[in-house]
Length: 242
Ligand SMILES: C[S@@+](CC[C@H](N)C(=O)[O-])C[C@H]1O[C@@H](n2cnc3c(N)ncnc32)[C@H](O)[C@@H]1O
Image (cartoon, rainbow, N blue to C red; front, side, top):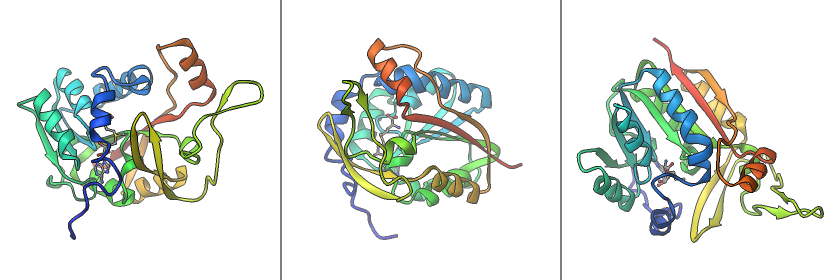
C-alpha cells in the first residue's frame, strides 16, 4: 500500500481544535443523543472485546473500559492517539487506517465506528475490514450522521423566513467528499446516500440487527427542539454470521 498523507482529510491540521473543544462528557450529539443508546447496544451485545475504529482521543474506549470491556482504539491521527494514551496509559491505542486494520481475522467481539464512517475515504473496504476482524456472531456497531444531513454539509444551518433554523437537503444521490468547517475545524466529510452504506455492509456479508434514530435525552431546550425537527444521527448494528 502506498503511504498515505495523514492530513489528506484535514484531521491532522484540525486535531488541536478538536482536542480543545471536545469535553470528556462529549458534545451535544454524543452526551445527549448517542452515548446512552450506543452504551446500551454494547452492553446488550455481551461483547468482552471492542475495537473502536476512528477512535479520536479514545473517549468511547474509556467509557466502555469503565463498563468492563477490553478495548482497542485505532485512528490515523497521531495527536489523537497520544491524547488517548495520556488519558488511559495502560490502554491499547494504535495509529492506523480503517481500510487496513492491524488486527487478525476474528479477533474481537465488536467493532465500532462512532461518527467516523463519514470521515473514512474507502468506506466499503473499511466495512469489510470491520467485519473481518470480528468473531463469528460478533457485531459491527455504527453511529453515523444521517445522509439527509450530510447531503448539504457545506451550507449548514440557515434561518428560514419564519425565523427558525433549517438544514437544507442537496444533491442527495451524489456521493462525494465536501470540506466542512465548524468551531475552528476544517475537515473533509463524505456524503453518501444511505443506500451506499447499506450496500457496503451487505456486501461485507453482515446482517442488520438494530436500527435507531435516537431522540435527545437532555441538553438545552432549544438544541433539543432543533434536533427533534432536524435529527442528524442514526445507529445501526450489524451481525457477522456464525
Ligand atoms: C468525527 S471524529 C470522531 C472521533 C471519535 N470516534 C469520537 O466520537 O469522538 C472522526 C475520526 O475519524 C478518523 N478517521 C478519518 N479517516 C480515517 C480512516 N481512514 N481510518 C480511521 N479513522 C479515520 C479521524 O481521524 C477522526 O478521529
